[in-house]
Length: 187
Image (cartoon, helix red, strand yellow):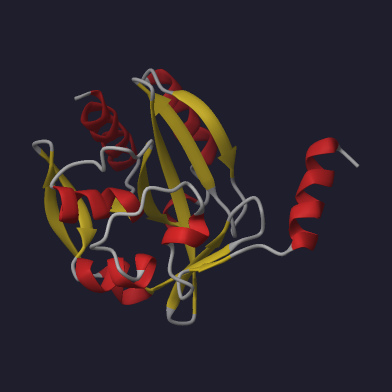
């Protein structure tokens, strides 16, 4: 119950700032395959465009704090813009994607790269999750195949390589991971 309430509140905060949140990744997978959140999943994912949030990061952080959310992570760079919020012990990752050629792209903190053909995220439909309406990719089967490959077979793993399709996810290199560790240590 709390997962749905947290996601609805996050959606509302984004919409109040003129942002069009689209559920993505495992959240879409759960709606399509399970008719609910995936039982063993620990978070929900929201897709937004970088253009929508480029100058709104600090305001959004304050909006979430004022809405009773804890901020677990924030980064406002073009290639890896992300805010992770938590409410009711449930994480919600809001990830901004920039446009490049025919794709939406982003990187994570470890240098891994992700890409989605634009058509999947620009053509949307409304889906219902726990009694609330959310935008989701219109061609959800194509989108899920792009992200997961065989999305109909459940995979219980926290290792991205075991469940993400190589057309969607390209892991960071050892050098990028080493650079990230140096950055964390301030060296």
